[in-house]
Amino acid sequence: SILGILIGEKILPLVIINGYGIMYKGMMNNIQIRYEFKFAMIAAGAATVCTVGATIFSCYRALAETPASLMRPPAPKEGKRILLERIPLFWKHLNFTWKSTLRNLFRYKKRFFMTIFGISGSMALMLVGFGLRDSIMDIARRQYQELQHYTGTIIDDEDATDKERQELDEFLKNNSQIERYTHVQFTKMSVPRNKSNISVYVYVPENLETFNKDVTLQDRKTKEKYKLTDAGTVISEKTATLTGLKVGDTMTITKDGKNYETKIAAVTENYMGHYIYMTGNVYEQIFGEKPDYSATVFTVKEEYKESESEVGNEILKHPAALSISYTSSLEAQLHRMLGALDTVIIVLIVSAGMLAFVVLYNLNNVNITERQRELATLKVLGFYDNEVSAYVYRENVILTLIGVLAGAVFGIFLHRYIIRTVEVDAVMFGRNINPVSFLYCGLLTIGFSMIVNLFMHQKLKKIDMVESLKSVE
Image 1 (cartoon, rainbow, N blue to C red):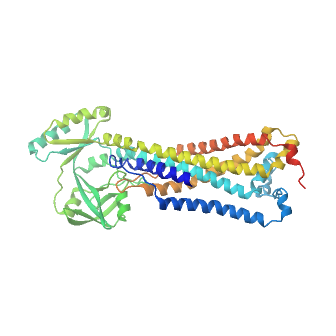
Image 2: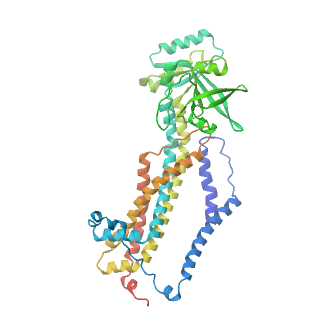
Image 3: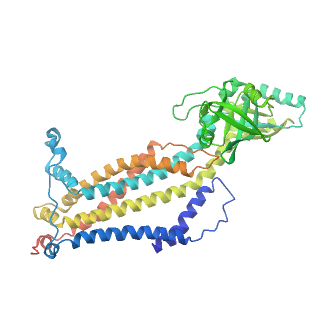
């Protein structure tokens, strides 16, 4: 407990702080990590209760026995018919070693469930690590490639004359490298949430046909596509989650200290920031004024994507263009920020590996010790060391595979819980785990199991047939 406190209260918080630093870059550099006596005592107390409790339970069972029975080695578990034996078509095609392996699995039920529980916990922890990377690293691509397709946003200069604005429009319209553009109102407002407010961006496009190409509105789960109509507003999923609103509800929007109400027509998939999309007519109905299209979103043709900055420099030569923000720059910046997550993933994988190794090693060690006379008998009957090891390994392999499957299911639920817990208000992480992550986690878990088997092989080779079979009466 002391060693765990000295290491755990310094290293793990540092990893988590580095992880949160991706959202608050530059603000979490000087944080002091102090030892917390209260939390240390809670952790040490829990560890002590678990270990001492298990010891008391074992001692109680042993002390209930008579001295004569304690001086004899424990009798082997009684073998029983298993359910698979009642399936003749399957059972009769198995050889002796596989039949004995399956019988031994269900013969030691405590070891059976403890091994599966330990392996599934290890698999779930690793899956959380890989799943966090999949869910978080993927949001940049999803946000700026699958949902928002435009190249950049031009912020108009408020002091520009109508003539200068018209010249900029003519340039955007006649430029052969630009595929499309449209004027938008992009205004920061707020939405009440309990006793606080959520900052939202109200997005009002001038041209709906172009907007449908610039932004994909869809349901995250069903992928059902939505159209922006005068039926109401479309809000991002994270906004709906934080405010507890759904389709058909009325949302309150605060602008310049005044509250306005609007009907929610759809909830759309979105990961970065909070958005409220509405048509110009809906905006006018809500706020009683026409939209001020003070920004322009534009899309560069696919063959000119590599030279988008050159196109932007040409745009900035016009007095009506104040600045440009590129979605590709935002995506690259987000990828760099999220790079700190690799440390978190490594910590989770190492922790999961240690758990798998400790659980498997201890259970196998107890298993071999309890069955030493049985294994010695097999060696006397002519089994070679590799054959005796394979006799035990088959049980480990089956238990590992079952544990991997159970851990995959458990890991999915654990991953979703952790994702919802670590999310900040301004971001919604994905809920996906890539199929290749399941493969990596399964292979790593099996790899840890194989390492334990190599250690156990040496122990099995050292079993002394004469000493193991001596009578102790």
